[in-house]
Each structure stands twice: as structure tokens, then as C-alpha cells.
Amino acid sequence: MTQHHRPYTTLLIVPTGIAAAIGGYAGDAMPIARALMQISDRVITHPNVLNGAQLYWNEPNLFYVEGYGLDRFAAGEWGLRPSRRNRIGVVFDAAIEPDLRLRHHQAIDATRATLGLDIAGIATTDLPLGVTVRTSDSGASWGTIAHPDSLLRAADRLRRETQANAIAIVARFPDEDADALANYRHGCGVDAIAGAEAVISHLVVRELGLPAAHAPALAAIDPDPALSPRAAAEELGHTFLPCILVGLSRAPQFVISPIAGHSRHMRQTGDLWAEDIDSVIVPASACGGSAVLSLSATTHTQIIAVEDNTTTMRVSPESVGISAVRVRSYLDAIGAIAAHRAGIATHALTAAAYPSIKPQQA
Image (cartoon, rainbow, N blue to C red; front, side, top):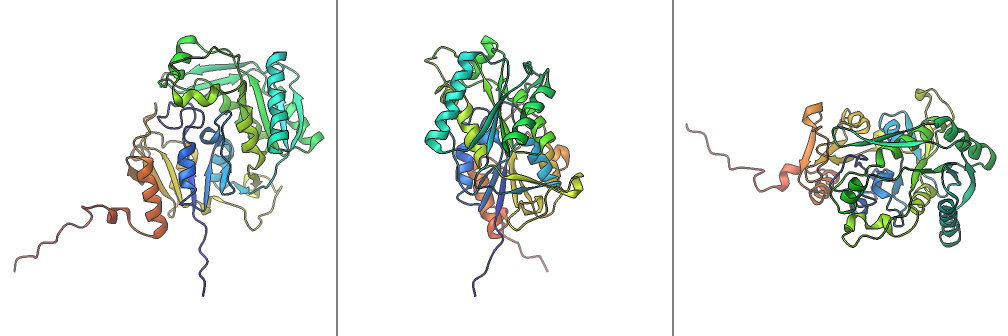
């Protein structure tokens, strides 16, 4: 008789804007996600991991979930419903200059003609969004927008008038500080815009309950012969939009449960819920996020903390009372998942797992 096992599901988290050694740049954690797809039936991760500007990776068992939605999912309030094709609405910030806007329109046309994506429509905000970026004393980036209501009006118009069920946002970001930009391009700085990007996408997902992601509109800069390979994906073209549109094209829809005060959807076979998560991989110094804390309260979810992926944070699993398997690298994390999936205790795979037992004296 053939045995049917429950699919093994891994959640990969690399928090945004905290100078992660892996995942602190555009798409440089994508190889981790690709490797995990070989040992997990389903891999859930967020745009920070999969957005590589002109570069991207899309597989049926890879789920692209925005950070706010991921937090609600981990808390058991929202589910994820796999989608084969989403209709994407694109919101443009009114502050984007005509030439820069044209480049983004051409990126949209390219994804329609070359990748066959379903772009439902485009809307422009009725006010400039007024994005600002900041860096905290801890080294993490954050930011604000002056007119969030304008963003929501444009996104909701796309939802109502074009039946868009995923929203891409393109906001004009201020030109970056020259020294900070140089450090980032040379592979030793924090992503100064990531925190503000998260604010923008969180707002749309929270208010509309639709998949959303953000691509910054930035002025062109001169080529740098000392460019770090980790920063190179961001400089291949005039826009970051292609990876956003690809990610959103098959992003799972949110199933908002009555627990969260809604009854828009009923559970269906194939939906994913927090109880389906078998393992979570997170940098060992960044264990204070909402999703990790929520899932750490379950008994069946294994938290794997990766020490080599250093960040500007100092929140260890022990400091927040989380029981975690500490590993040195993502290679070790992959081994820990293979052991967990096989039902093998990780300590059984080390040479010192079973020291000799000396016979007791009579």
C-alpha cells in the first residue's frame, strides 16, 4: 500500500534592511531558496529574498508572500491559497519624472510580451507619495510616506475597476547619500531603502488584503568598476520592476479567516495555514520578528538559527525564549531540515552524539 505523507513546508526569513550578510542585497538569498526547494515540498519566503531587480526565480513550490501577510499567516489569522495566475495592477507615484516613468512602462510591456504576464491596469496616485528614508542607531533602515491615503486610493481603484488581485507599487525614492550608496555598491553597507519599501507594501496588504510588493524608482547612476557582485543585479537595467511583477504573478492569495474579523473566504483543500509549517530558517541574530515568535510557540515547527548570516540586530533565539537548532551556515541548515524531515535528531549526525558509557563500579 502506498503511503501518503503530508507535504514538508519550510519558511525562509531574512528580515529586510538590517544588513544581512546573505539577503541584504537584491536577490542574494535566492540561491538559498533554490536549494531549499530541492529538499522541501513547499518553500514560503518573502520578496526580500526573491527580488533580484532584473533577475528572479519562479517555481511552482515557491511561495512569494509579502512580510505583513507573512506575519498574519504565521499568527494563524490568514491562510495562503496557491494561485496559477494573478491579474496585477501597477500603482505609479505621481512624483516619478516622465523619462523614468517611461522606463517603467517599458518594463511592464516587456513582461507582458516576453513572459506573458497579466497586467490588469496602471493607476497614478493623485498626490506625490513623499517617501523619506532613515537609518536607525542600530543600523537598520526605515522610512515613511507623506500621503499613504493617496497610495491606497490608487490601489483600491485598480482592485475595483480592473479586478486586479495583486498590486505592484512604484514609488519615487529620494537620491541616496553618496557615501552610503558607495558603501552599499561595494558590498559593505545597509540597504537604505528596504525599510521604507516594507512600510509601503505592508500598508497595501494590511488595508486591501491582496498580495503586494514595491519597486523603487531611482535616478540612474554612473557605472562603478569596483561594484560588488552582490549589488550587480540592481544595476543591469533602469528599473527594479521585473522581479516584482514575476513574483506577484503567482503569489498566493490571502485567505482571511473569521478569526481576523473577516469572512471573505472559506477554507479550501490546498490552502496553507500556520500549522502546515514544519521548519523556519532565520538569521541567529534576528529572531525577534513577529512570524518567528508566533511559530516558535508551536510544538511541531523547528526553528533553525543560522549563525553565519550576521545582521545589525542582536536578538538571539535564547534572548526571546525560543528553542532553536543553531547551525553555522545555510548548508548546515539544509542538513538540519533533511534530518528533521526524516525524523532524525540532529545530534545523531555528529561524531560526539553518543559518547561511550563507562560501566559502573560494583
